[in-house]
Length: 257
Image (tube, rainbow, N blue to C red):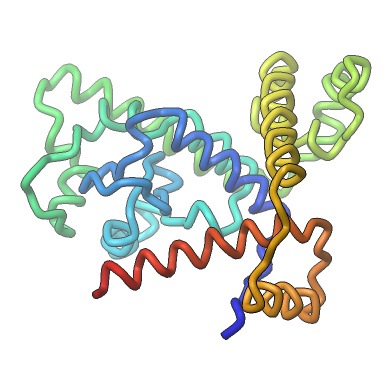
């Protein structure tokens, strides 16, 4: 049986890489902010936390006035949502909402206490300070949502774009994404671009050194992908992706058994 591939928009591919790096580069982000499950694949955009699939369903029941849930892999994130989310993360959110409570079931009532009433922050003066910080964070999110469609970033960051180009970064599309994520900070944008280029080169090296030896089933899957209209630039890269996906499904199969 061939593998069905869902085409992901280019914008989300880029956002997913950034969100995935943000998750892996901070230890607290590697675990669900509510139950502690490893490698959460969802996030509450306005609360600024990574959450697992199970907790994401409860967050949705809280309603968008409390928690706006998105997948870090498949949902489209605006530049403003990305900016706001990257400021927070689980480590900062833990100071506001409290740490994961071990050996306690995550329920809808528990999440309301944690995120809506801040019941797990005990000191009153600290509580008031954190409530103000939370309101500021929410305000930034709501403001960015209201004004995101009106911003002309190419004009806003014209001078910064010229600086990046003069430094040898000639791909305007990537420059603009980096400037949006760093709010026009040329130095931070430069670091983002350099890191992205380094990781891209690592992957290219991996693909170039990998032996292309697909099985008959893998060859069939690659042919199906081509017939679906996808532009395959590297058969080796596609083969590696197929093996990763098949390995994941094999792992699930073993777990079920």
